[in-house]
Image (cartoon, rainbow, N blue to C red):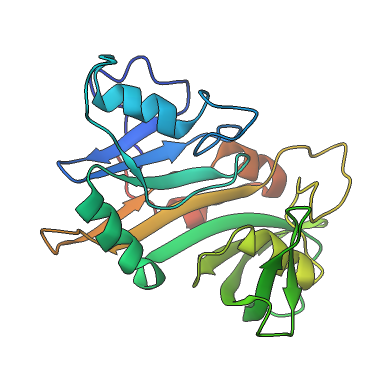
Length: 242
C-alpha cells in the first residue's frame, strides 16, 4: 500500500509518493501524466528528475544519483522502481523476467475467456508504434497473462501479469484480442468521454539486490478505475491497510 512520502520529499510533485527507500532501492507510486525519464521535448518534469533532486536533498553539487530499472508510460500510473547504485540496477534488471508485476486494466467490451495468456513477437516501427508480428526474426517474444475481475455493461476490469517487459506490451496485446485499454488513443478507440488511460501498476514483488529478501509492494485501486467499473470491495480487501 502506498504511504505518504518521507520527510524531505515535500518538494516532490503532487501524486508522486515514495513507498519504500533503503540504501539501494527506491520504490514510488507514479501519478498519471508524469514521464519516467526525459524526452527531447520534456527534460525536467519527470519522475527521474524529481527523485534525483530528492536524493540530492536539493543540492545541485551532490553526486548522488538514481538509476532507471524500468519505465511506465506517461499516462500509466502505479509502482515504479529506481536503483540507487549501478550494482543494484544490474541486479534488478537481471532478474526482471522473474519479477512479479501486476497491473489493473479497464478494457472495452467483455472478454470471451475469463483468463488467458497472450503471446506474440513485438516490434517497434519507425513511427514509434509497437505491433505484433508472427516473424520471430523481427520481434521479441512477449507474454501477457490476464484474469477477469469484474464486468460491466461496457467495460471489463482485468488483472494483468506482465510476464515479459516490452514497450507498450499490455496495451498492444489487449488491443490485439479486441479489448483495448480505455483511454488508449494510440492503440485503442477514439473516446472523448474517457481521455485518461485506465492502466495502473498495482503491485510488484522482487528479490532485494543485496539482502536477498523478497519484497512486495502494493497500491490502492485508483479512484478513476472505480469510477469506470464501480465498487471493487473484493479487490480492495486484498490490499494491505495502512
